Image (cartoon, rainbow, N blue to C red; front, top):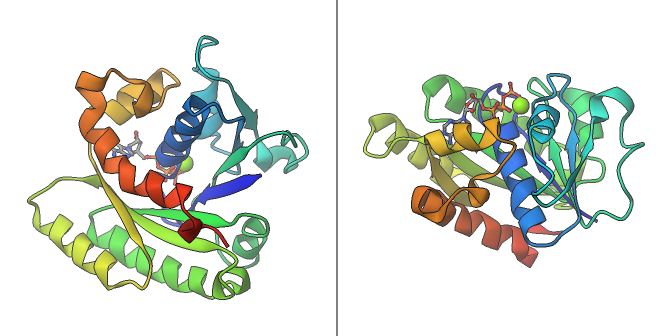
Length: 212
Ligand SMILES: Nc1ncnc2c1ncn2[C@@H]1O[C@H](COP(=O)(O)OP(=O)(O)OP(=O)(O)O)[C@@H](O)[C@H]1O
Ligand SMILES: [Mg+2]
């Protein structure tokens, strides 16, 4: 089972947004998808409850309650939505089985600094050190031609980690979430700019580079 986690100890950077969109993308590729929510806020499970039956099915696993007991063994892909403020032992435990981690970072000084500290800690987790877990970063809620986006770009470029995509700030994400959809399930005329921005991230996920 392919296991992908969206993770950053910084709150509000887009973990649940990326996790739900990834789940819906894989579901649209005829994969059996499980969406595993480790956050007691339950945003991913809330999104799933809004999803209608005519859409490709996704199995919800509220892992903050009882771990992976209800993870369907037949799933092809499991997408993990992590909680904010994950550190230390909890972080190491969370990374026990996943092979790929995506870290969203927002264009704000507070977020860049908090994410820098988090990435430092993440790099020290033994499975990450041994490259059993592959980590990539994504800029999220980006507004082009802003100084702070330049700053975020510069920061992400200096990391010795793949900088996979920059995703614009768009109402499409909010619109899709409220309907239990991913942006890939919105009409092309609305969502094509977002589809294009996701492509390099999806290519990486489909390649050996994101796997151990
Ligand atoms: N690219 C985007 N464009 C517009 N809004 C976005 C985008 N990404 C995330 N958001 C919005 O930002 C807010 C935070 O996103 P989200 O809940 O996904 O973050 P999170 O990291 O899961 O937060 P938490 O740490 O609380 O779990 C939400 O209101 C979401 O709709
Ligand atoms: Mg969340």
